[in-house]
Length: 286
Image (cartoon, rainbow, N blue to C red; front, side, top):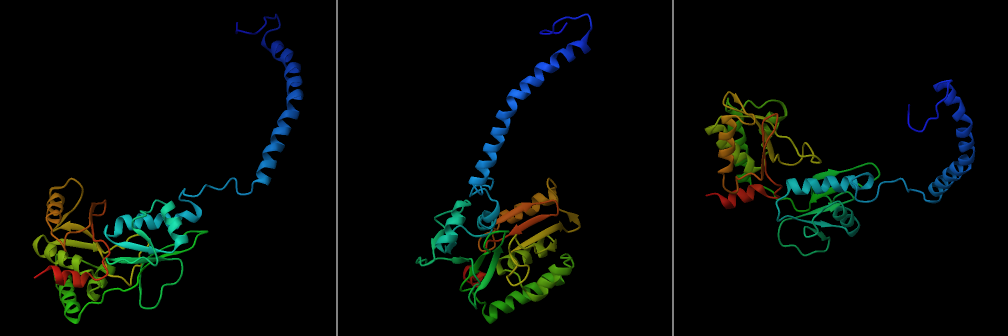
């Protein structure tokens, strides 16, 4: 026998029918209260437009572009690079987690490396480094206002190194990677590192992937995906991969990469953005 049920010779069906009138009367008394509660909720929603929208700083809606910018800054810029930002944009980016020390007003006097973050089209002569857009938000464009220009000698050095890397049978670059090497559109720091890697380890170049938000063309390639050493594919935990990682870890500036990551496709090696990488290599190498 279940606790709380009154025994009856007619069994469970009778007990069920005996309880129905009491339950119906309860619903009759409660229904006005339920209706009043529903009306109250609807009224609150009507009187408070936008109450269902996510709060600011959640990374949704208008904050998505700012959050993407913050991730790019953390992963692609050297720590000493400062960003000059209009006040309204600065508020959005700091709310998305941007470092206030690196985000300065547009009129700040900065002696070191600097980039601009704009919500409008950049001025002629500047270089668009990255662009972030999201539905319902202004497009945020990272601009180098005074990009460095290589000298004729530096440009020739870059072309010669690119041609030598491409001609090495170990390189195996095809498609877009081969086109970038053919044009010599590779950051001089990465190019110098690749020249040694191809000559000494026989690495294979699978791609020069741009970071999220960066244009595929128009800026020098700063990242490379290495998919093998000699004939052995690189993968996490392999001895050949450990050898490559040790080689990369031993590099000195300006050829020491900012990031090295083992992925499912290979080892991703990247340098932070530098306005004048050719001049930097010239200054720091004999």
